[in-house]
Length: 314
Image 1 (cartoon, rainbow, N blue to C red):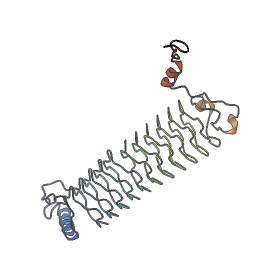
Image 2: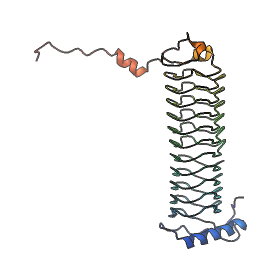
Image 3: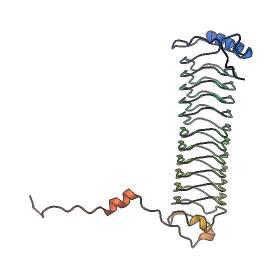
Image 4: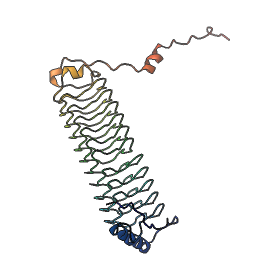
Protein backbone atom coordinates (compact mmCIF):
# COMPACT_ATOMS: atom_id res chain seq x y z
CA UNK A 1 0.00 0.00 0.00
CA UNK A 2 1.08 3.59 -0.53
CA UNK A 3 1.27 6.16 2.26
CA UNK A 4 -0.10 9.57 1.39
CA UNK A 5 -0.74 11.02 4.84
CA UNK A 6 1.44 13.56 6.65
CA UNK A 7 4.78 11.98 7.24
CA UNK A 8 8.23 13.00 8.30
CA UNK A 9 10.89 12.70 5.67
CA UNK A 10 14.62 12.69 5.82
CA UNK A 11 16.39 15.86 4.82
CA UNK A 12 17.55 15.85 1.22
CA UNK A 13 21.20 14.86 1.44
CA UNK A 14 23.80 17.18 0.12
CA UNK A 15 25.46 15.85 -3.02
CA UNK A 16 28.05 13.29 -2.13
CA UNK A 17 28.54 9.70 -1.23
CA UNK A 18 26.22 8.09 1.34
CA UNK A 19 28.04 5.55 3.48
CA UNK A 20 26.78 2.04 4.17
CA UNK A 21 25.98 2.80 7.83
CA UNK A 22 24.01 5.95 7.01
CA UNK A 23 22.16 4.11 4.23
CA UNK A 24 21.25 1.23 6.58
CA UNK A 25 19.80 3.76 9.04
CA UNK A 26 17.76 5.46 6.30
CA UNK A 27 16.40 2.10 5.14
CA UNK A 28 15.47 1.10 8.70
CA UNK A 29 13.63 4.38 9.26
CA UNK A 30 11.88 3.99 5.91
CA UNK A 31 10.79 0.47 6.86
CA UNK A 32 9.21 1.76 10.07
CA UNK A 33 7.49 4.52 8.09
CA UNK A 34 5.98 1.92 5.77
CA UNK A 35 4.95 -0.46 8.55
CA UNK A 36 3.19 2.23 10.60
CA UNK A 37 1.53 4.00 7.69
CA UNK A 38 3.67 7.08 8.22
CA UNK A 39 3.09 7.43 11.98
CA UNK A 40 6.66 6.48 12.88
CA UNK A 41 9.96 6.41 11.13
CA UNK A 42 10.90 8.58 8.19
CA UNK A 43 10.32 8.27 4.48
CA UNK A 44 13.54 7.82 2.52
CA UNK A 45 14.20 10.95 0.53
CA UNK A 46 17.42 10.50 -1.39
CA UNK A 47 17.11 12.90 -4.32
CA UNK A 48 20.50 13.59 -5.87
CA UNK A 49 22.26 11.13 -3.59
CA UNK A 50 25.34 9.24 -4.76
CA UNK A 51 24.45 5.55 -4.40
CA UNK A 52 26.55 4.25 -7.29
CA UNK A 53 27.37 0.59 -6.75
CA UNK A 54 25.25 0.42 -3.58
CA UNK A 55 24.10 -3.00 -2.36
CA UNK A 56 20.32 -2.72 -2.18
CA UNK A 57 19.23 -6.20 -3.25
CA UNK A 58 15.73 -7.00 -1.95
CA UNK A 59 15.56 -3.61 -0.22
CA UNK A 60 12.11 -2.23 0.49
CA UNK A 61 12.13 1.20 -1.16
CA UNK A 62 8.41 1.43 -1.80
CA UNK A 63 7.41 5.07 -2.29
CA UNK A 64 10.98 6.27 -1.71
CA UNK A 65 12.14 9.49 -3.38
CA UNK A 66 15.28 8.98 -5.48
CA UNK A 67 14.92 11.67 -8.13
CA UNK A 68 18.21 12.39 -9.83
CA UNK A 69 20.03 9.86 -7.66
CA UNK A 70 23.22 8.21 -8.90
CA UNK A 71 22.56 4.45 -8.87
CA UNK A 72 24.90 3.39 -11.67
CA UNK A 73 26.02 -0.20 -11.11
CA UNK A 74 23.88 -0.54 -7.97
CA UNK A 75 22.49 -3.94 -6.98
CA UNK A 76 18.71 -3.60 -6.71
CA UNK A 77 17.86 -7.19 -7.66
CA UNK A 78 14.53 -8.20 -6.16
CA UNK A 79 14.05 -4.75 -4.62
CA UNK A 80 10.59 -3.33 -3.99
CA UNK A 81 10.41 0.04 -5.75
CA UNK A 82 6.64 0.15 -6.06
CA UNK A 83 5.55 3.77 -6.46
CA UNK A 84 9.11 5.04 -5.96
CA UNK A 85 10.17 8.26 -7.67
CA UNK A 86 13.31 7.82 -9.77
CA UNK A 87 12.80 10.65 -12.25
CA UNK A 88 16.07 11.58 -13.89
CA UNK A 89 17.99 8.95 -11.92
CA UNK A 90 21.13 7.34 -13.35
CA UNK A 91 20.69 3.55 -13.25
CA UNK A 92 23.24 2.77 -15.95
CA UNK A 93 24.35 -0.83 -15.60
CA UNK A 94 22.27 -1.34 -12.45
CA UNK A 95 21.03 -4.83 -11.52
CA UNK A 96 17.24 -4.81 -11.19
CA UNK A 97 16.43 -8.42 -12.06
CA UNK A 98 13.18 -9.50 -10.41
CA UNK A 99 12.57 -6.03 -8.95
CA UNK A 100 9.15 -4.41 -8.77
CA UNK A 101 8.95 -1.03 -10.45
CA UNK A 102 5.18 -1.00 -10.67
CA UNK A 103 3.79 2.55 -10.69
CA UNK A 104 7.30 3.94 -10.25
CA UNK A 105 8.30 7.21 -11.91
CA UNK A 106 11.22 6.61 -14.26
CA UNK A 107 10.70 9.68 -16.41
CA UNK A 108 13.98 10.67 -18.11
CA UNK A 109 15.87 8.05 -16.11
CA UNK A 110 18.89 6.34 -17.64
CA UNK A 111 18.73 2.54 -17.58
CA UNK A 112 21.19 1.88 -20.38
CA UNK A 113 22.82 -1.57 -20.07
CA UNK A 114 20.82 -2.25 -16.88
CA UNK A 115 19.59 -5.77 -16.08
CA UNK A 116 15.79 -5.72 -15.77
CA UNK A 117 15.22 -9.44 -16.35
CA UNK A 118 11.67 -10.39 -15.31
CA UNK A 119 11.12 -6.98 -13.78
CA UNK A 120 7.54 -5.79 -13.23
CA UNK A 121 6.93 -2.38 -14.84
CA UNK A 122 3.12 -2.17 -14.91
CA UNK A 123 1.92 1.39 -14.52
CA UNK A 124 5.44 2.84 -14.46
CA UNK A 125 6.07 6.24 -16.03
CA UNK A 126 8.86 5.75 -18.57
CA UNK A 127 8.51 9.03 -20.45
CA UNK A 128 11.78 9.71 -22.32
CA UNK A 129 13.48 6.90 -20.43
CA UNK A 130 16.56 5.28 -21.96
CA UNK A 131 16.72 1.47 -22.00
CA UNK A 132 19.43 1.33 -24.67
CA UNK A 133 21.20 -2.05 -24.63
CA UNK A 134 19.35 -2.98 -21.44
CA UNK A 135 18.48 -6.58 -20.61
CA UNK A 136 14.66 -6.85 -20.35
CA UNK A 137 14.12 -10.57 -20.89
CA UNK A 138 10.75 -11.74 -19.60
CA UNK A 139 9.84 -8.24 -18.42
CA UNK A 140 6.13 -7.69 -17.80
CA UNK A 141 4.85 -4.36 -19.10
CA UNK A 142 1.55 -5.30 -20.74
CA UNK A 143 -0.64 -2.27 -21.38
CA UNK A 144 2.17 0.16 -20.54
CA UNK A 145 3.35 3.29 -22.29
CA UNK A 146 6.81 3.20 -23.89
CA UNK A 147 6.10 5.85 -26.51
CA UNK A 148 9.32 7.36 -27.89
CA UNK A 149 11.40 5.26 -25.45
CA UNK A 150 15.00 4.43 -26.38
CA UNK A 151 15.26 0.62 -26.57
CA UNK A 152 17.92 0.45 -29.26
CA UNK A 153 19.93 -2.75 -28.92
CA UNK A 154 17.87 -3.86 -25.90
CA UNK A 155 17.28 -7.55 -25.15
CA UNK A 156 13.51 -8.03 -24.87
CA UNK A 157 13.43 -11.75 -25.55
CA UNK A 158 10.24 -13.29 -24.15
CA UNK A 159 9.00 -9.93 -22.85
CA UNK A 160 5.26 -9.56 -22.29
CA UNK A 161 4.31 -6.37 -24.10
CA UNK A 162 0.77 -6.95 -25.33
CA UNK A 163 -1.29 -3.75 -25.74
CA UNK A 164 1.82 -1.66 -24.98
CA UNK A 165 2.36 1.73 -26.63
CA UNK A 166 5.68 1.85 -28.50
CA UNK A 167 4.79 4.48 -31.08
CA UNK A 168 7.89 6.38 -32.14
CA UNK A 169 10.13 4.14 -30.02
CA UNK A 170 13.74 3.45 -31.00
CA UNK A 171 14.19 -0.33 -31.31
CA UNK A 172 17.00 -0.55 -33.85
CA UNK A 173 18.87 -3.80 -33.40
CA UNK A 174 16.67 -4.84 -30.46
CA UNK A 175 16.13 -8.54 -29.72
CA UNK A 176 12.43 -9.40 -29.37
CA UNK A 177 12.54 -13.13 -30.08
CA UNK A 178 9.54 -14.90 -28.55
CA UNK A 179 8.07 -11.68 -27.16
CA UNK A 180 4.34 -11.02 -27.08
CA UNK A 181 3.51 -7.72 -28.78
CA UNK A 182 -0.06 -8.60 -29.72
CA UNK A 183 -2.32 -5.54 -30.03
CA UNK A 184 0.70 -3.27 -29.42
CA UNK A 185 1.05 0.12 -31.10
CA UNK A 186 4.38 0.50 -32.92
CA UNK A 187 3.34 3.29 -35.24
CA UNK A 188 6.43 5.07 -36.61
CA UNK A 189 8.68 2.88 -34.45
CA UNK A 190 12.23 2.32 -35.66
CA UNK A 191 12.98 -1.41 -35.84
CA UNK A 192 15.68 -1.58 -38.51
CA UNK A 193 17.71 -4.74 -38.05
CA UNK A 194 15.64 -5.88 -35.08
CA UNK A 195 15.20 -9.60 -34.29
CA UNK A 196 11.50 -10.47 -34.04
CA UNK A 197 11.75 -14.23 -34.58
CA UNK A 198 8.80 -16.33 -33.38
CA UNK A 199 7.19 -13.21 -31.99
CA UNK A 200 3.46 -12.75 -31.42
CA UNK A 201 2.40 -9.72 -33.47
CA UNK A 202 -1.31 -10.44 -33.76
CA UNK A 203 -3.37 -7.27 -34.37
CA UNK A 204 -0.19 -5.21 -33.93
CA UNK A 205 0.05 -1.79 -35.58
CA UNK A 206 3.23 -1.09 -37.56
CA UNK A 207 1.87 1.86 -39.53
CA UNK A 208 4.79 3.85 -41.03
CA UNK A 209 7.26 1.83 -38.96
CA UNK A 210 10.76 1.10 -40.25
CA UNK A 211 11.39 -2.68 -40.24
CA UNK A 212 14.06 -2.66 -42.93
CA UNK A 213 16.35 -5.64 -42.54
CA UNK A 214 14.36 -6.95 -39.57
CA UNK A 215 14.01 -10.69 -38.96
CA UNK A 216 10.34 -11.65 -38.44
CA UNK A 217 10.77 -15.31 -39.37
CA UNK A 218 8.31 -17.71 -37.77
CA UNK A 219 6.22 -14.90 -36.28
CA UNK A 220 2.44 -14.62 -36.00
CA UNK A 221 1.35 -11.61 -38.08
CA UNK A 222 -2.37 -12.32 -38.20
CA UNK A 223 -4.26 -9.06 -38.79
CA UNK A 224 -1.08 -7.00 -38.24
CA UNK A 225 -1.20 -3.57 -39.90
CA UNK A 226 1.85 -2.67 -42.02
CA UNK A 227 0.27 0.37 -43.68
CA UNK A 228 3.09 2.40 -45.31
CA UNK A 229 5.65 0.42 -43.32
CA UNK A 230 9.18 -0.13 -44.62
CA UNK A 231 10.02 -3.84 -44.83
CA UNK A 232 12.83 -3.58 -47.36
CA UNK A 233 15.15 -6.55 -46.99
CA UNK A 234 13.11 -7.97 -44.12
CA UNK A 235 12.94 -11.72 -43.48
CA UNK A 236 9.33 -12.97 -43.26
CA UNK A 237 9.84 -16.69 -43.86
CA UNK A 238 7.52 -19.13 -42.07
CA UNK A 239 5.31 -16.25 -40.92
CA UNK A 240 1.53 -16.46 -40.52
CA UNK A 241 0.17 -13.52 -42.54
CA UNK A 242 -3.56 -14.25 -42.51
CA UNK A 243 -5.53 -11.00 -42.97
CA UNK A 244 -2.41 -8.88 -42.43
CA UNK A 245 -2.55 -5.47 -44.12
CA UNK A 246 0.27 -4.38 -46.42
CA UNK A 247 -1.32 -1.29 -47.96
CA UNK A 248 1.50 0.93 -49.25
CA UNK A 249 4.16 -1.24 -47.58
CA UNK A 250 7.66 -1.40 -49.08
CA UNK A 251 8.56 -5.08 -49.60
CA UNK A 252 11.60 -4.40 -51.76
CA UNK A 253 14.05 -7.26 -51.30
CA UNK A 254 11.92 -8.86 -48.57
CA UNK A 255 11.76 -12.66 -48.28
CA UNK A 256 8.20 -14.03 -47.99
CA UNK A 257 9.01 -17.24 -49.86
CA UNK A 258 7.53 -19.51 -47.18
CA UNK A 259 4.97 -17.14 -45.65
CA UNK A 260 1.50 -18.58 -45.09
CA UNK A 261 -1.84 -16.86 -45.49
CA UNK A 262 -0.92 -14.40 -48.23
CA UNK A 263 -3.45 -13.43 -50.88
CA UNK A 264 -3.34 -11.48 -54.12
CA UNK A 265 -5.56 -8.88 -52.52
CA UNK A 266 -2.95 -8.27 -49.81
CA UNK A 267 -0.04 -8.11 -52.25
CA UNK A 268 -1.87 -5.88 -54.72
CA UNK A 269 -1.68 -3.16 -52.08
CA UNK A 270 2.09 -3.49 -51.50
CA UNK A 271 5.20 -2.44 -53.41
CA UNK A 272 8.25 -4.49 -54.33
CA UNK A 273 10.75 -5.32 -57.03
CA UNK A 274 12.27 -8.41 -58.69
CA UNK A 275 14.33 -9.10 -55.55
CA UNK A 276 11.17 -9.58 -53.46
CA UNK A 277 10.71 -13.30 -52.84
CA UNK A 278 7.11 -14.56 -52.78
CA UNK A 279 5.66 -18.07 -52.17
CA UNK A 280 5.62 -20.47 -55.18
CA UNK A 281 1.91 -19.88 -55.82
CA UNK A 282 2.79 -16.28 -56.76
CA UNK A 283 5.44 -17.27 -59.29
CA UNK A 284 3.83 -15.21 -62.06
CA UNK A 285 2.78 -12.36 -59.78
CA UNK A 286 4.62 -9.03 -59.93
CA UNK A 287 4.46 -6.41 -57.21
CA UNK A 288 4.02 -2.78 -58.20
CA UNK A 289 7.29 -0.82 -58.09
CA UNK A 290 7.80 1.61 -55.26
CA UNK A 291 6.75 5.13 -56.33
CA UNK A 292 9.50 7.72 -56.54
CA UNK A 293 9.69 10.08 -53.62
CA UNK A 294 8.47 13.57 -54.43
CA UNK A 295 11.90 15.14 -53.95
CA UNK A 296 13.56 12.50 -56.18
CA UNK A 297 10.98 13.06 -58.89
CA UNK A 298 11.41 16.84 -58.72
CA UNK A 299 15.20 16.43 -58.93
CA UNK A 300 14.89 14.33 -62.10
CA UNK A 301 12.50 16.83 -63.66
CA UNK A 302 14.80 19.80 -63.10
CA UNK A 303 16.04 21.23 -66.42
CA UNK A 304 19.74 20.78 -67.08
CA UNK A 305 21.50 24.15 -66.65
CA UNK A 306 22.72 25.58 -69.98
CA UNK A 307 26.30 26.72 -70.18
CA UNK A 308 26.78 30.24 -71.31
CA UNK A 309 28.93 30.82 -74.38
CA UNK A 310 31.03 28.29 -76.23
CA UNK A 311 34.59 27.15 -76.04
CA UNK A 312 36.89 29.97 -75.18
CA UNK A 313 34.02 32.22 -74.10
CA UNK A 314 34.76 34.90 -71.56
